[in-house]
Length: 72
Image 1 (cartoon, rainbow, N blue to C red):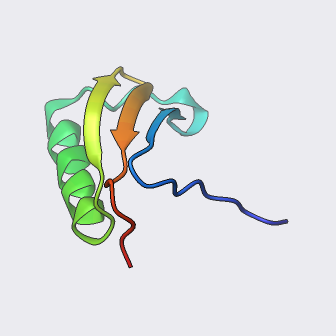
Image 2 (image 1 turned 90 degrees about the vertical axis):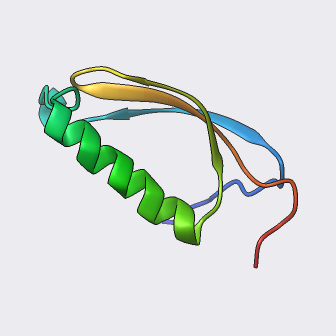
């Protein structure tokens, strides 16, 4: 199976992430802290901007924008 990734510089992407078995844990305050830390860690190596995010108990919707110039 070939996994494709879109990497158009400056592009904005919408996606939805759903928890395993739709477990409702994303809105717990301690899990929001962990989610923010995870975003910071990923963004340190893979820069992008979170344009918008909606976090619900069992899924999230997000708009992310890649940097205008290609990295690496």
